[in-house]
Length: 431
Image 1 (cartoon, rainbow, N blue to C red):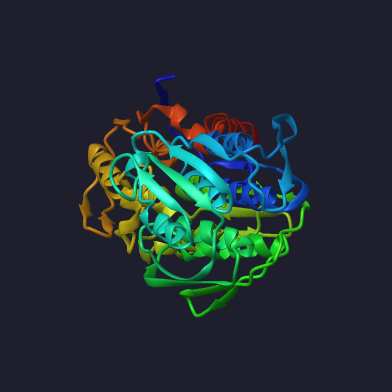
Image 2: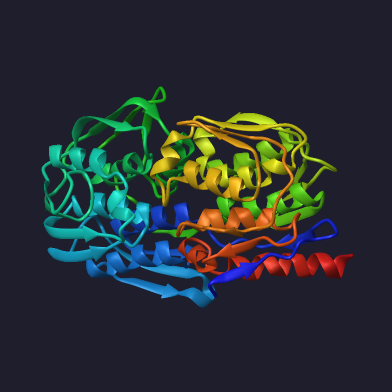
């Protein structure tokens, strides 16, 4: 479908939903399972464009992988740090995690590996990661601009050692380096210069590494030490539901004054985006959680908020989409790095809010959204899954919201609209 119309509700949402596995955890688990010795089983794994690009790259590197989408299960035959294929042409689509994690993975091998992606992926930053890989022994031949795809990486096993790098545009490059460091030829220290964005994702990486048997020693906020010789242990690993994707369902409860329960996702999640619950609580929502679910109940009207979202920046669009319905302004700060995501997310959000008649101010690293009446419109999504999913929630309050290119959600949540409409149907049944 080219477009999809969102039905406005005349009642609060009232539903219990299930969310597929986390994209961030699935792709991290794929990498460490590939490095482990022996078979790992990933349960509740995400099957989406991002994870399928990753799986295809592993197959092209001759690391056996078995996909079972019916069981949401992936089996990876880890090769103990060996990269069997000595040459591969790897395509990552628009998957930033695949681009960064696979580039780091092949640096452990001895071979020639070309990496490329779609046009927007060629504009996303790779340079800090590749600089470290070059210092660790690899050679990189760029076909276009230095620091960007496409390029060919000639690897000679990653040497390890002491490195300084910036992580002010994305934390994925640091996560990629952390995950391969146990297989370096010597102990490795990474020191981050300046601001480390999205720190919660680095914490997630370290926690997942620990789950597979590898320790990262963190000193302060910006230094990470990894002892060489540590090895990931093959295991059964259950991927948590995706907290980022759960945000849209929780937001539906928040904006309609309703109730949504997400099964198998709790405040103890290792995903930083579980902090969305704190944001909603500050805006007036009630949060109820147990050992096997989290439930959000929305207020009669949301309250405005002034918030630093650097650590949960994938949720900027979710907050922006419900901000016009708050009783006072919503200011989102310290998120300049989201201009380098699937699209320039600050510009995209501002453009679409203004299309809806919302008063919004744009700054280099923040935006301020005023309470505003909404004028129905068709929302451009810029090939960005989070634009499509976030503005779906806006449509619950205002008739006439249409989402263009809804298929872009296949990147991380292929059946998003099916589950979203099931939530609405369940709400009607429960009335």
